[in-house]
Image 1 (cartoon, rainbow, N blue to C red):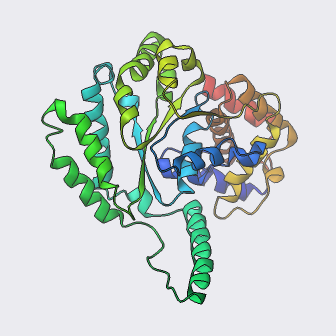
Image 2: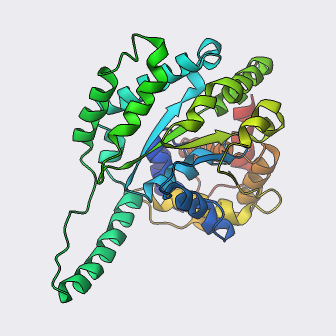
Image 3: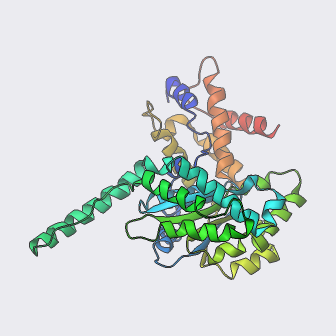
Length: 361
């Protein structure tokens, strides 16, 4: 790889872990593609297309790709509206009160509505691909119907999120939700009713971002938060007339509170474990980041030699299957290389090892 390509990757932050929900989906490489089968994205997509509300857990270690898998699956379903709720900022007081947790969710939905669901209103490549498939299918159906004298009605495309946002904010303010705590759960049901009419997108409540608790220096506090999340905060949401997806860390499944909650879930989907054989998946994940960067046409082998990939695999294996950690190490390695004089043509295990040590210090 040319030195200029390394500089471009560093400048673009090609390997910086994604933050926004929509961006997570755009940069995700499907696990079904990496390991074969239809047990992850395909399974979640099928569940979320059911008419009745489903409650699904997506399980895996911190940084293993839970959020990105959910985001990618929903990007492939343009008829659905993801409502991600970042609960990392919810304090103990919120988690131990069903009322306060309901208010917390409503405030977040209201915030998203005030932006007119901006993240969804600008479809990325996944949504565009899904919309193209829908249009192709509709076009074929139209020809069949027209032969029978019928016309295809309705339009295809991104929902009118501006109008939907007005309806959502109106539904929230028409209740006493934010003033009277006893009405918070009814307020959530009122928001769900906005999406009942035909033609409205299907809302999906996503309880996410609790991975940040795992990095807390106070593990007793983190465990207490998880216990309250499962024993108290989430319980009333299980009856909410809306799809719900909950990101769950592996070590939480041993909590009695989660075991009780899991009995009421529709299904649990597990993130694949690449430990001991991560080279292939990591190659595809890194290659996707390279090809997704404007101004870079080189292939993966031109950026990393085999020793660098082996070192990245070791980072994955020894950091509890964290793809996020692997990307952070590679991000630091690329930026360090871009600052060298001269800039190297390729990264080796030495670059990866040095970057890993930097992050550990």
